[in-house]
Length: 263
Image 1: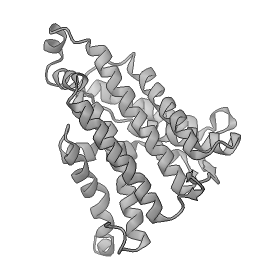
Image 2 (image 1 turned 90 degrees about the horizontal axis):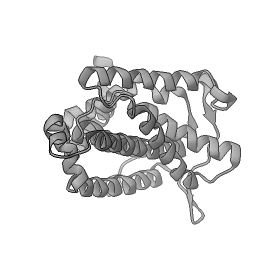
Image 3 (image 1 turned 45 degrees about the horizontal axis):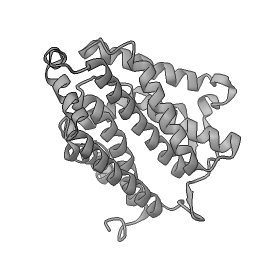
Image 4 (image 1 turned 90 degrees about the vertical axis):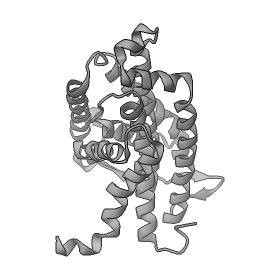
């Protein structure tokens, strides 16, 4: 009920917070549960958004129907990047993920395949439509994102308390001991990468639905840093921490924007 009495500007802020919550709930699987340093998460966000935009603009696929494709493309990219680097740890893994993120961004800037629109990006993407209702207003988009955030929290809470979730935490705390106890650490970490990346692809679809356009800046390193900071600020491995971190990194700067001249 929070957005009902406020204006569209603050509804848009809440929508933005919802997008980052989705992104960081996915990133929390990789960083918080599996203990892997991922600093290229924005690349999967951009891949999901571009997949949805291209299917809508080039093939006329309704945006809602592009959600599975965006999730699969982002998840597949996460699997491809994770396989050769999962033996790396700490800073070394972080450096490789940064490089991957920059490679994706540069491919988008250079108009790979002649379809990404280069530095100008893509425009004119239609909003999500469900049973004839088009999600065009700030309020409707807020509730759309809220639905997916609630669904994601439920799903990740179930994952956290599952055998797989416990395996992630064992790997995070002591990978050698986890492997000695019979856990396939490579498979466990690969699943974390795939799931976290897939959730970023979903967030990309919801972003392009409301904005209607997309540019390579969506996959920039700075975006990845903000996402990583949200996870760390709220406390790694904590679902409520993601909500707190998003409020601190995304919500408060907007609420206090009126003091920008005092900086």
